[in-house]
Length: 465
Image (cartoon, rainbow, N blue to C red):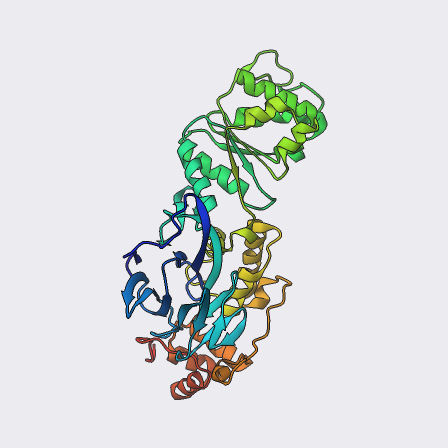
């Protein structure tokens, strides 16, 4: 498949206002059978109808029969060529899927027709879509892939606010401007710090310091280094964190945890651009780029005297706030792909749709760090099989499939259907391979597929390997 093509053929209606405004957004969030496929964001402001179907990746806007349409094509073998549509009806959006073999699943429930609410997740084939509202400017691209700098360490996002922050980071990366990263624990502050270093072009190393872990009695020795014999236990010269980061980047993680003495000593070193190792009388010049991070409110701490105002001023050059994962669900697919690459999951990783849904439904109190640990565990437990809900170990229940209409009978979740769908996914639609796994004939597999409403993509192999 070539590079995806997204075509805008007319402008968003908008409201003529300047600045941010609430827009209805549809995110093609994740393909369970293609987790490395990039997600995409589609603004629905000028759209009357969205149609879905299997095909080469595309998003095309046109007008036909008086309807302004967005046509989305997805290379999902479990989707039909005509897999339903979204209609804008009296200010609301209705999902209709009367004809496809596999139907639709909205909020975990199989259905043929459903009114969508902001925040709903729906599934067509093995592809998840996120329907929500977002604050976006009038000039935002109507159809977009993640923006950012993937080569710098996974800084890609569909979240508009975070995208603007990343653009600013890229602009200042090669300068001497200090960077202060704010956000909840686990939001990926060190990932951003490493990306700043990668983009800076500095030849020295990236040195990360856990400020909360600095031993009070050895704080100066750890920061500035020491000479052999300077104190009991100093059996050799040590450069310390600041000298180790010379010509590179010093990352002060959880900088708010520095003791008052450490704050004063660090401020002096930053002002003078030199350090004096413990046990030495001669200062050593340092050339460091400073990136600091904290989950605490430094301004509030300055106000009550818990953090030095002058050090706070030194840390502030560009301040970037990282949103928690629960506020950027549109990026879960981006992050899954990036984390799987980092964890060495391999190109063959696949997810059962219910597991993909669970990942998007989870509140992620530990943010990106929690998602990474979850995927690491799932890869180990799945052992090469498609990742299922039980492999995620989330502790969050996934709603059992409930069938609200007779039209959805063929989609009812059963152990047999789940097993068949898992085998089709693992074998990329090869009916012969599925038949061997089930120790039955290809014709019987075909009958089972038809019974459970599981589509077989055009071109799927039915030959013996």
